[in-house]
Image (cartoon, rainbow, N blue to C red; front, top):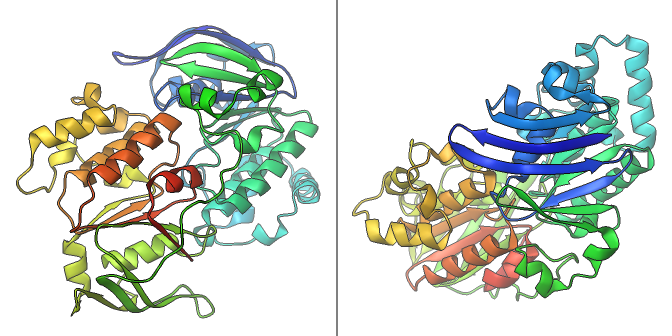
Amino acid sequence: MVEIKNLSLDYGEVHILDDISLSIAEGECVLFTGKSGSGKSSLINSINGLAVRYDNAKTKGEIIIDGKNIKELELYQISMLVSTVFQNPKTYFFNINTTLELLFYLENIGLAREEMDRRLNDMLEIFPIKNLLDRNIFNLSGGEKQILCIAASYIAGTKIIVLDEPSSNLDIKSISVLTQMLKILKEKGISIIVAEHRIYYLMDIVDRVFLIDKGKLKKTYTRSEFLKLDKNDLNALSLRDKELSKLEVPYLKGEGEYQIKDLNYKFTDDECLSIKDISFKLGKIYGIIGSNGRGKSTLLRCLIGLEKKSKEEIYFKGEKLSKKERLKNSSLVMQDVNHQLFTDEVFKELSLGVKNFDEEKAKIILKDLGLYEFIERHPMSLSGGQKQRLAIASVMCKDSTFIYYDEPTSGMDYANMIKISELIKKYRNKNKIIFIVSHDIEFLNEVADEIFEL
C-alpha cells in the first residue's frame, strides 16, 4: 500500500530525514515514534505530499502509494489516496458549521449529493457522533475537534489515514473515543499511520513500531517485540510508558498567599466557570486537571487578567489585584505556541520584552532544553516539540511572580518531558507560584506539588 525507498529530506540547508526505507501493508497500523525533532512529522508530511508541495522541502528517493509514485501526482491527487489528521485540529478546518466541514472535501471532488448523504449516514452508523452535527466548530472542545477530523478523514473514502500526534491535547475520555475510532478504521481495512509520543492507547491496535532517531530509521519492532520492552527500556529510548499512568500527586490543600475569593466567567446562559474561596502558596507548583471543555485554559486567562468578561476577586498577600496588576506580573506558555513566537531568531525570542536580560542564564536554559544548537535558527523552522520548549525557555527568562503553562508537554518525548519538569522545579522559588494545565499524568507526577481539578 505504501512503500518508501531511500527517502531523504531537507528544508533548505537543514537535513531532516536520511535514507529511510520501509513499507506499510493494506489495513496495517504502524507507529512512528522517537525523540521530538527526530523527523516524525516530516515523514508524515512526506507521505501526504505536504512536505514538498506546501513546505518547499527537497527530497531524494521514492514514495509509492497504491502503485503510484507521488512525485508524479498533484497534491489533490495525493489527497484522494491519503487523508491527514493534524496535531492541531484548528489547521484542518475550512468551515464554521461541523456538518459542512464533514462534507467539504466531498463537495470539492464533485460527488453527487446522494453519495454525500450515503457516506454521511454510513459514517454515523460506524461512529456515534450525531451530537457533533450542525454545531459551531469554535464551540467544540479540543477532543471533539480531533474526533471531527478523524470522521472527516473516514468520510473522504481514502484507504490510508496519517495522524500527527492526535492525542496531544486530549483528556483520557477523548483518547478512549479516539482509540475506538482507530480500531474501527483498522477493521475496515484502512491503513493507519500514526506519529506519536503518547503511545499507551495504541498498544492494542498497532502492528509495527518504527523508531525514528535523528532522521534515520533506527529500529523496527513487531507489536509483540515492542510489548516486551519495560518502562526502563522505553525511557532509555526517550519513549513514554506503554501503560496509562495513575495520578500520584495530592489534591489542593487550599492554603497560601494567593486567594481566589470569587471568580465567574459565563460561557453561555447555561454554562459558567465559577470558583470560590481557594488559595495557593508561594513556592509551589500546581497542576490543573479536568476533562476537555471544562474551562481550564479559560481559568488561566481569567487569572492572568486577559478575559474582559470575567468577574473576579483575587487577593495576593492580602491586597486585591486588578486585571492590569495580574497581567503585569504574569507569564504564559500557550497551548498553541505558534501564537507567541514573534522574532526571526531563537535567541532573540528569549530576550523579547525582558528587562535586564541575562544572556548567560538564557544560554544555560537553551542547553538544558536541547535547543542551543538552534540558537540562530528561525523559531518557525523548529519542530512542534522544539517550539514548545522555546516558549518554555522564554518564560523561564522572565522574572514573573505568576507563571502559567497550558499543556506544556503536548507532543513531547519522555527525555524532554523530564528536562522540562526538572527545569520548572529548578527555576521556581519562594517568590513565585506556578500553575500547569495538563492532561499529561506522567508529567504531573514528576513536577506538581498539588492538584486542582475542575
